[in-house]
Length: 368
Image (cartoon, rainbow, N blue to C red; front, side):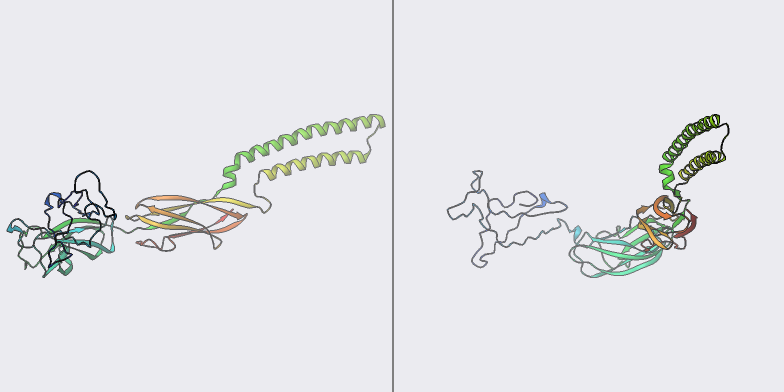
């Protein structure tokens, strides 16, 4: 079968002669079934008698061919007229999706739509009328050749032209498709910059409301305690004075000390609730870091690293940042109370080929 179509009728490939024993050479016209991509299927077993099934004999041999011979298939195209009696070269250029300044590469594709040509010919590539590539092409029977063309690209719009058989030495059936031209825009390289914004206390941000409610509750409870204890002391002292006619100095001092201690405890407890992290505890913060791509081409697959007091604390992978765009990454850290040195580095491994690298770091000292 050729492209799913049965060819050859009921031929079982066994009609060789004595001179070519074991060889059965067949030719089939498949022009009606030609596609861009073609395939041939050799069948082991075929319904020869048309009863709808492939029968087997007592030895297990299938109807038709019961085994496959070694096979070789050649697809041959013959021109109906003499129009293709000469070669016919064409050329086109394939540019990458994003051309960036600096060392770059694009592809030239040369085709021969005519007769096989086995001699050499010249390909030239121009950028803004200046030759950037000139090379000899040797075309084989495949009729297609792909070449990588190097180019030191500069920023801006350029006219890129390719010319096959530039010397005009080959007689072709069609000379009008030997030149291909297009315009290409070369973008500036990516340019990543980084800036550390003001750190944000994660504890205060997430728990500020609950801390305020807790402090208010403690204050109310302490006030109620004072209102209950002080009248009780005053009543006790008054009763004693009425019975004894006078108030001993020791009892007076004791009452004053009790009231002072109650008031101090309330103030101290309320103060501690209003100062989270006091007493040398660890603090949770978010460090906002702004990354900007000041170039035109996209920056791909790079990392943002954050250092605290010289030690790497957080690494964030970023898959893509388009040219002219910026993002803010909030990186979590835990530090002791006090001053710390923070440093952010973007593309530390130099994965991105940038226009400049002197703006890839930023650092601050912050009192946490």
